[in-house]
Image 1 (cartoon, one colour):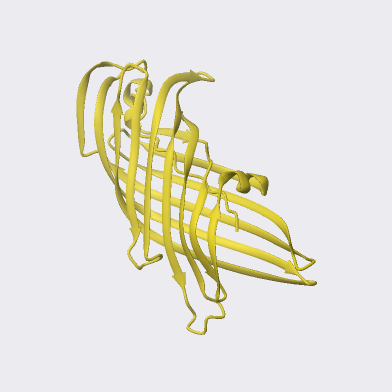
Image 2: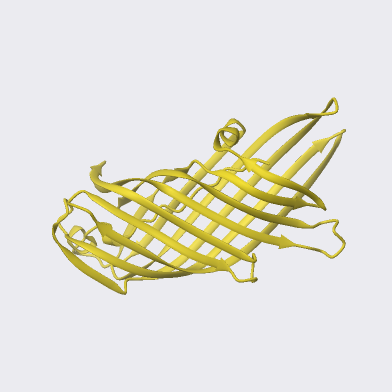
Length: 259
């Protein structure tokens, strides 16, 4: 059951000098489009049918119909909010005992969070954006909403199954300037707590390069991300049981541009 997911490209305000680049306003908007080459590994269950989930990215890309991903952050340099969203649709046809089975999967993933910079230390020297090189730490809290939908067509019949859940999460973000152009950012958060899923773990880290695109300060990013989700919804009859115990992981490419 191939699914392709997007990942949140961490766009810390510490990467940009929001006060120097926008002296007449208190708030800055950072937009970060990206792609995540995710592979899936784990197990799942739908209506009492158990299956292993082992999908390399090459298989996912083969069946990909549509993918849209992006992150928006609004910050004043000390604290801020961020919104992250992905929508992905895949479709495939399989032959089972001379019968063709069609499978159409749609995945929607939305997250919103709040962060606050609790620690910042100057490392010496300036970046190409004209701000001091720093190392900073930002705790974060938020909500992550996941929705999976599957349309199955076989033997002249059509069926739709879906599940959705919302996970609260807590975590920490960090930003470190390696030199005037290169920086390293990352985030780790843990969620679920039996509120939505049993457990979710998100970890990501990116190496960034400062430059300029279309007249805007920009950071090109490449890194790696892992998202583990353990969710189960049981109606006690087994007829509509949905279980998703899957680890998604892979490289991420994107950029962050300040406005």
